[in-house]
Length: 576
Image (cartoon, rainbow, N blue to C red; front, side, top):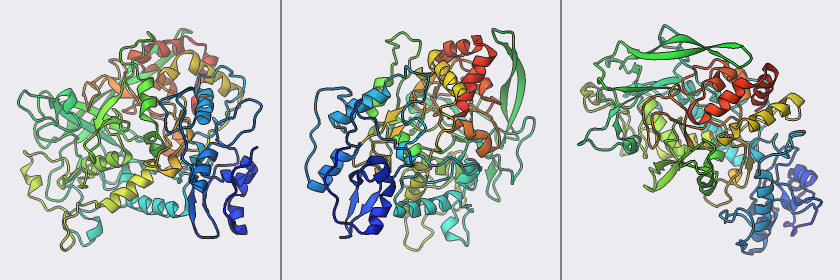
């Protein structure tokens, strides 16, 4: 490979830190780490240390060219400004040089050869990919390319994520402010082992101490002519339920009655596949037992299980223009898929932004998603959502008479979760590593991958992206080739999956395409295989068969396949 400009003179220990990079890239100009020269200067390289297989984009056939970061590294070392060519593929990616855009276009193109794995597809998160683990902590590792000082921030953020909050007033000043009504005392109790949540046991509700707080019921009512718009729901003209707010809170502090408890019952419905196989599906019905007050007669209820947490920072780093070009709201290509962007607002800047997080993509950033979770799930205020009484409404007068944790320190006007803590939690959430894929070259996995493409699953579950290269993006997330299998768009999933509760710019029939990376580790991490927004599907086959709306053609094509072909597709999903 071509040699880049020499690095500053370095100590042997620094050279050792780039040993892996030397072996993979062929020159430590591509060293994938924060490299400390002997002068003490820290040079920030745009790519970071990868596992033994490089996730760099391929060079032109027959040529071993510079690594992805080489041109930018040269600019850092010599102070040379890079120029972006106007011609070539992906012209809207002005954050990339022409050579990178050419190689990116080649690997992001639809796959045609299913006889072998694509280059780098085992590295689901590029340089951030973590080694596969056989434990239930597989989703709880920090991204492989974090610098040592960032790993310390990750550990502190993890501690806050796991911390149990207490009601005010409390002797533990750093932890008080919980509630007055809430769903959970800690982030980790919803996102168990940073994995997927699950619904309540059928026919009964949870008791204190169980870990099943990983499920909530969203509440809202239709928008009236004289009502003020609400940040998360105004665009679809709905409002929080007047007595209980935007989410049912099934726990409360001492002296306050809980709002109610979720209760689920299932009806068994059968669907017959083309080969005669009959599959039993369970259709849920939800209600609220022991409500503290009567519910609005037009209340809309939406069940949600907690999403898994891996790879969030990389999803935030996907270029806006890539998402805009995938969107097809008017189905101009006539493929019956009309994904559209979720239009949100960045609460920090007040500017419009593309929603990416949550089941209906209501939040544009990991930090904002974290702030809304603090407020709605635990009743904790932040600078972004300054609601110390959480989700309480003006009709819940007893709630507003209780103390909060705001201003608990002398001469302090800080919210219950100060910015320093919010930033650490957001950093932790943004840097939970995506495990390396398994068995990418297995013949059955490859056959399943071909079927996944053939029947149109990739119309929504887009395999890969190249993240942005910009100073506003965390260095560990810049210019990474990632394989999340999502387009982050809103899609009409049909009447069977509709919650009939709009949120943000999503209708009552629309859901964000959930990323599929890590889905094959659900049993290992979460101890169950319950899927979809409410956990109704007990396995991946049931999850596919519940698809409707824009995904109906893919669902029917799956149902028409032989038992062996269906098993191949499921095996592919299990490898993700």
